[in-house]
Length: 254
Ligand SMILES: O=C(CO)COP(=O)(O)O
Image 1 (tube, protein in one colour):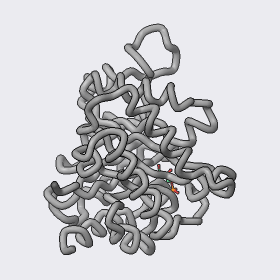
Image 2: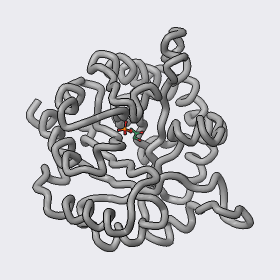
Image 3: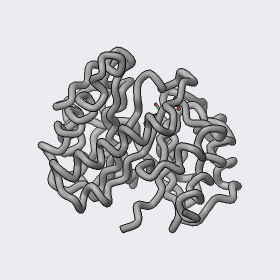
Image 4: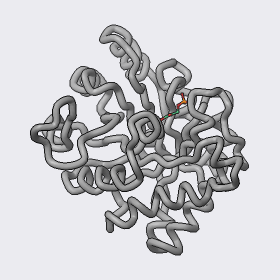
């Protein structure tokens, strides 16, 4: 079966061209486990995508942080899936909580984006996760199931999807989910796929964790059976991202 460990770096709305070049050169010089062990994808802001793609080592992939929900056209300020494909950008992050909450992206809108991006040949990192209020109300599983179901209702092939579980209360707060909390939701989601999609998809889909992942906490999280990697925000802008990539070896030596 073998779910290859996946480490994504979401740079969000950060960086100047010089800073971006610096991060890329750190990554290019890094000694990391081979492509058989870990898949690494970094996601710079749109404007830096061509720069990063041209400079970044070829064993690392590049992702956009969003794209338009359907075919491009008269949608000022948007970037289409077609454009990403045209530039040779293989991945896109969709449904990040910052977009769901700050820009009002609904489960259905995110699901439409996922379906369209896949139809154009992009690979998708689809994000789900509950707010603190939802967690405290005991609704975590309902929320992530509804977010995942909206996508499952619109796609039939999960091969090119990585699901990122990112509890909103852990994003950018320094308050990481404990390994037990992460495993609990990841195993719930895998079970959800088993029941609602198929045993094959449940076994093969990668479910990665995001929210205050650092070099200090990544190993314990990576050791959880249903944690197949990470989506890293703040720490992906720093050299410690390389240490997070290296946590993949925990799986290969297991
Ligand atoms: O939102 C995230 C990745 O998409 C996580 O961000 P932080 O790692 O900064 O908490």
